[in-house]
Image 1 (cartoon, rainbow, N blue to C red):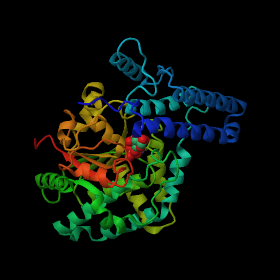
Image 2: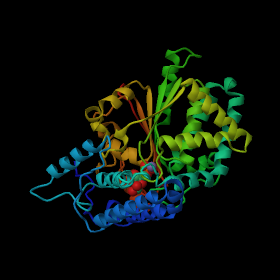
Image 3: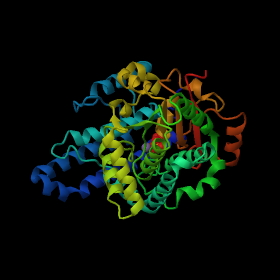
Image 4: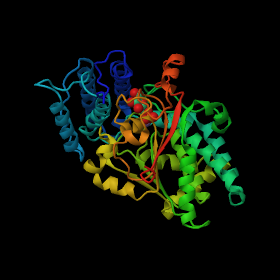
Length: 440
Ligand SMILES: O=P(O)(O)OC[C@H]1O[C@](O)(CO)[C@@H](O)[C@@H]1O
Ligand SMILES: [Mn+2]
């Protein structure tokens, strides 16, 4: 198989990301820290201001390393995942011939992009007392508030469903399942890393646009996902759901709300008995969900000045209290590893996922890690590229924002390239791709 996306392929999306988008993101991070100087002073006095200066100097150094293609340096912050990161750095070194060191423009894209976010974390962590500052928090909360109308619309829709959930026929249930799955899918358009931190929020009601967006879904395995859920429901009897569903979350803001709405529907319709959410341990790819974002979102929805939105918030809090919903995080999600390495590099997480009946992987970065971010032929099967990563039946819900795509029909990719050359990176197209270890 062709090598990973090595960044020296000029004009590739990978190259442009490292050359243009990542320095922009770093500049914004530096600016955010600087703008918070007064806050640091109020909270920690002079010590806070000193920490702010040191963090900015580390981040400026990082930006310079990136822009001048310096070698990748080992981490030194002593955090739990430091050793694993440094071993990975050595592994990459071993892959290169002779004594050439891996550097920003001469390494796999996935690795360098993850590495940048981990170095941002290091720059902050090394500087107490501001070491818990989330440099992306402002952007995430802003994007939540910018999507208020859409959030209200979807919460109102969900509460409408709640009223007659019990009376829905199987066909009606399927129809609603497909709708909410697509809402969660298109929620993935709203990430802040592809837009280099620029507002990218959902303004209109997501339900209304589903029909027009349908033809942009290049692979739609949603009926296979449905069958899977129905089978496990049948196994538990009509009123006793047995399915444990895991959602590997992606972005906070509107996307997270769409995931919570889907999770609520699965529980309320008795398609699932428990939902396990998986978030990031550190601020990641600008808008990814951390525990703090998850809890903040729950509180915001609950305290909203909108009847149906706050009703959702109270229900969701209830699910958390009862243990019907559980939130997890694990350092593996913020390592650069492909998921086929999980059973070896994070066996505890793999074992946890094996308890699931269905795992949703949200978003583009998860897709890149599922597929190993390689230049696969478009028609290679999704099952094959997982290369043994099959803890349980799984489904990727992803809008395309990176040039890797598998599981297409013959000619489909070529046709898209001819008609819409940016189809793989514009975020306009999407896939719902399913794989199960049980139907090989
Ligand atoms: O939030 P998502 O869907 O994972 O998207 C983030 C994507 O944006 C990018 O940063 C674009 O470079 C990709 O690396 C990443 O896959
Ligand atoms: Mn993301």
